[in-house]
Length: 332
Image (tube, rainbow, N blue to C red; front, side, top):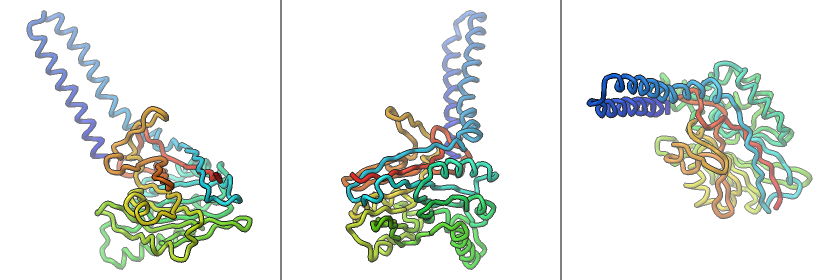
């Protein structure tokens, strides 16, 4: 993505140079005094315009990257048990601890998370960038994320060590084992192709978690949704945690109609785009992931895509703020 942004910047820069040359050609027969005045004006305009992309990149790194935004979603479904009417779930995703410089940035996000007083907290993958060691420094601060009904997590494509050049398979295996242990150290209930029952006042709903499964052929498919659904009550209200939103379109919708709400992350909203509620919602991410941010619905099934908490590649965000999602359940 950083490479793409650089290309956009230089494309814009060369466009300004082209326009400058084109206009100067039209000034050939003008008096010298008038040409000089127009050239000075055009130079100032050109410098100002070319500064816009550069200043945006810097602003996105210094300010927007850690300007956490709370998105509140009211989700209604007749299958939600009466006891869970008003039940609050906080979703966070894509922390990418390998991109964090210190714990202060994370502490600010956790303050917002805990302020919501959620009943349940879910993390939808990508704790690290490449190796599990990246998360060790942040264990103590991440352990402060707690909720009455627990914290549940899944793995994202970056949590398997697939993007690191390991000396051998044994080292990769040890790193993955450490990743599993880190989730335990955080008191997070890691769901690996399995489900749990969330109970309240003799009523319940099913929370399902799968390992990473994406439609993109470059991502290994660790997820096994059929295994995760074994033995569950098909009539119960079901929430699925699946890191990659393409899983919803390619498999959930076509094979598993009993899943009511899927929570994903992964896209980061490309960390670049324009969002003005009620007017425009655009990001280059849409050309790769049709479902890239926010709520989507197909018949009776819903998908919510979290824009991510951290950064990857370009260490900033332009127009797409890091997200903390508060989902409140309502029995319709």
